[in-house]
Amino acid sequence: MSFTQNSSAAGPASVGETPEPGPHNAVRIIAITLLLALFSYIYLGRANKKKLEEAIAKQHHCEPVLPYLPYKWPLALDLLKRQFEILLSDHAFEGLTPYFAVAATCCIHLFGATGYFTTDPDNIEAIISTNFEDYGLGSRRSAFLPLIGEGIFSQDGQAWKRSRELVRRQFVRVQKQTLQVLTPLVGELLSSIQGAASPEGLVDLKPFMFEYTLNTTTNLLFGEPHSSMSKEERDAVRDNFDYASFGCVGIRARLADLGWLYSPSKFRKSCKAVRDWATFFAAKAFKYKDEFGEEAAMEKYAFIIDLWKEMQDFDLVRDQLLHILLAGRDSTASLLCWTFFHLVRNRDVLERLKQEIASVPTDGDITREQVQKLPFLRCCLNETLRLYPTPPLNIRFANKPTVLPRGGGADGMSPVLLPEGAGIAWSTYHLHRLESIYGTDSRIYRPQRWESGELLKKARPGAGYLDFHGGPRLCLGKDFALTEASYAIIRILQKFPNMRLAPGVPNEPVGAEKTGLYCWSISYRWYTCIVDVVRPSKRRKGVQGIKLLQMTKSPRKPLL
Ligand code: HEM
Ligand SMILES: *[C@@H]1O[C@H](CO)[C@@H](O)[C@H](O)[C@H]1NC(C)=O
Ligand SMILES: *[C@@H]1O[C@H](CO)[C@@H](O)[C@H](O)[C@H]1NC(C)=O
Image 1 (cartoon, rainbow, N blue to C red):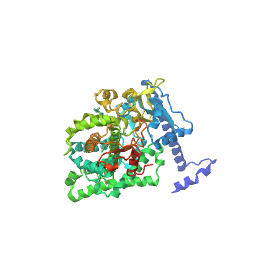
Image 2: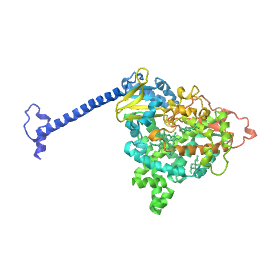
Image 3: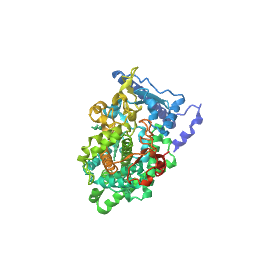
Image 4: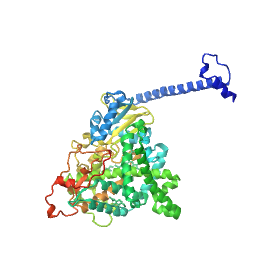
């Protein structure tokens, strides 16, 4: 009691007086000593770190990265501004080409800190595989937390390892299932397309692809058809999901450490709506478990119940479901959209693919063996994932001083020391369009390039070709996504063999096509094609392209 009184009396006002000896002085001395110790700890720590970094740099003959992006405004804010302009343009990734063309590895001084970006396959391999342990997700974690919370996509280290094992187990189980479960879902997809087509057979495929991948994810993984939710609820989830993921990926992730600054109430509401969606599915499974017991629930809701057994926490289970949804819906829908986008623009490819799938019976379930006997289909999928990878840009942060194999010195061939905390981004989009790997026709959709297998050797999956990432964080849904996409493509082409590009729909060269966030186009019109569901009647024969376009359903409100 007297102690507190004393110390407040001897506060800042007593400057100039000789301090009386007493307990408050002892406290002050201790405090100052501690502060000094802290400062020297930080200072010496920094100095030690610097020494350590210098030693590592010397040992590996590192040289600094010389090319950098010039900027005009303080803290390079003009570069940030430009980045957002490009993001909001119709060419979100093509617009970055001048930056990625400066050098294979380049630096950027943003907010006064140095960041790096690269399209060098050796560097990418080092980041995602060889030196995997030296890197973490950094601000990607905080960018995504409001939407998806804790889970495989936002975790590093031990927590990630645990989630990965849990989720991996589920995919092993799904992989053993027959493709029978996909049959009714693809059936719904076909009838949706048919139902939406105009009398001339004109239809925008894009919205159905997103619905299909959402439907497959909920059915196969969450054990519950999406139809158990009302139509309004489903539409709301879709719109909120688009809005919220734009906020996370488009804005927060790009603001890096300042991502938390973006959190308007509409964004927070969308995040909550998406969480409520997952709550719906998790709650169904939990209710079933309480009513019919764990064993019965395990039959019907294996994914969710298995997660619960491990985590024993409703919110944690729900968040893992969100991670799976985030990973699975848009990526696979994008693969499907761009594949059809190019099939209707490259008739030779379309014809070859149709020939190949003629071997698959048009009724009954498709089997894994049948899908595996379609090598050209796989070439098409690889070609789509080459030109339109998800995610097109990626980033990691060094969690200790580490060495990039290349990018330093005047010729850019020396190793580079990355100090702790440094961010390094890579562009899969630009990597996959490099002429040095993919040839002078790298900007042409040509699935045939994959046929001989030579290209794959040159590109090296996990280094120069990152269809499903590589290293320890390799996509867990790879088999699921390829199967789901193949099944849909086979049946769509069988049902609508005369599919073709609608007149009046632009056919620009690769690179000039509109792309929005991630890689898919923000414009539905780009995916419009004719599927010939109804034979055009004589009366309609003369209808012209532009008129046809006006008759399509009005596109869904764009995101931006
Ligand atoms: C064509 C479709 C797909 C593509 C191109 C794709 C691509 C990727 C990529 C590049 C990553 C690594 C991301 C990173 O760590 O920075 C990843 C991770 C992951 N993917 Fe996929 N994915 C696809 C479909 C799916 C599907 C359908 C699911 C599940 C339903 C899924 C589940 C996952 C999971 C759980 C991870 C996290 C792995 C980890 O961090 O350990 N993916 N995917
Ligand atoms: C998705 O599922 C809902 C509900 O089961 C269904 O009405 C809809 O047609 C499905 N959409 C597609 C494209 O498969
Ligand atoms: C497609 O790419 C994958 C790399 O993930 C490879 O394993 C596969 O063999 C490729 N297929 C073809 C036909 O090129």
